[in-house]
Image 1 (cartoon, rainbow, N blue to C red):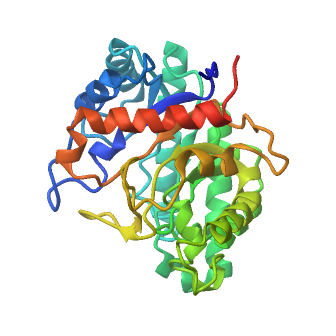
Image 2 (image 1 turned 180 degrees about the vertical axis):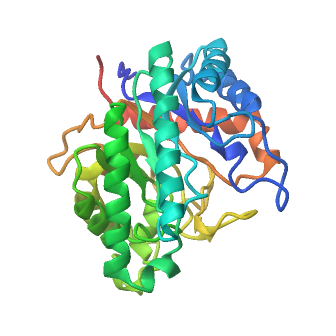
Amino acid sequence: MSTNNYPKLHNATWPGVVGKGPDSEPLIPIDTMLELTAAAEVDGIKFDGVDVGLFDPSIDINDPKEGAKKLADKVAAHGLVIGSLVAPIWGGPVLGSKEDRAVFIDMVRKACQYGQYLKEIGIRPYGVIRIDSASSPETWAADPAGNTKIIADTFREACDVAAEYGEKLAAEGEICWGGMHSWRAMLDTLEAVDRPNMGFQADMSHTFLYLLGYNSPQDRILPADFEWSDRATLEEGLKTLTNALRPWTIDFHVAQNDGTVHGTGSHDKTGRHCLATDPNGKLDIAHDAGYWMRDEKGEVTKAFKHICWDGCMFPNEVMYKQQTWNDILAALIKVRNQHGWSE
C-alpha cells in the first residue's frame, strides 16, 4: 500500500451550485456538500479538504472577513481544510465594457481578500484563485488578436491585485470561455499575460476536449477519423496537450469524461463530468492523471500541494448518494498512489 501523503485530496463544493437553480434542479447547500465530503471514507482514508466557489448563496463575497470566519468554522467542524477558491467574476465579462472589466478586477480583489483571511485563520494552507474570461468563444472569435490582448491586459491587472495578497491566479482550461476555449488559445493567453503569479488550471474532463477541437476545430489534436478504441493515439494526443500546458499548470482537477459536451441550467456546454465509475468514460483516470502530474522524464512535478475532484452537473439524485463520493475518493487515492509523494 502506498505511503504517499501528498498531494492532499480535496472535493469541490461548487457542484452543488453550478448548473443548478431555477432553470434546473435545486441548489445543494454547501453544508450538505461538506457533510457528504467528510463522511466519505475508503480503507481508512478520508478527504483532506475542499475547494470552494465563492458564490454559494451562503457565501457573501462582499463581506470577506466575517464570511471567511463563518466558512472556516463550518469547514473546520468537519475536520477539513480549504484549498483553491473560485472568484465569482461572471458579472464582469473581460470582453465586455470597461465597467465590466472593473467589476472583474473588483471580484478578483474580494476573492483574494477572502483567501487571505482564510490563511490568517489557518484553515487554508495552500491553493490558488481560479478565474476565467467570463466571455464566450463567439465573442472572442470576432477579433482573436485584439480580444486576446484585452484578456491578457485584464489578467495582468488581476495578477497585480493578487500579488498584493500573495496569491496566484489560475485560468481554467474550459472550452466555454473565450481565449481559453482551445489549447492554443489558452497557451497564447498565458504567454501574453506573462506574470509569475499567473498559471493554468487543468481539469481532466474540460481540458480533455481540447483534444477534439470543440469550439476550435483548427486546434484539434486527435485525427478527425479517430476511434476511441485506439488508445495509443489517444495517449500521444494527451502527451502533446500536457507537454504544452503542464509547465503552466498550478492547479489540477481529477475528473472523468465520455468525449462529449454537456450543460445544464444556465451553464454553457463544456466537458461532461462523468462519475468516476462511468463505463463510458474515455480516460484511465489514475494513469492519465500522470500526464499532468509527471514531467516529460516521468518525474513527479509536485507543482501543486493538493488535487481536487470536480464533478459538476451531476443529477441531485446522484450527488446525494454517499457511494458517489466514496467512489470519487477511491479514484483520487489511486491517483495519489501512482503519482504522489511523501513529506
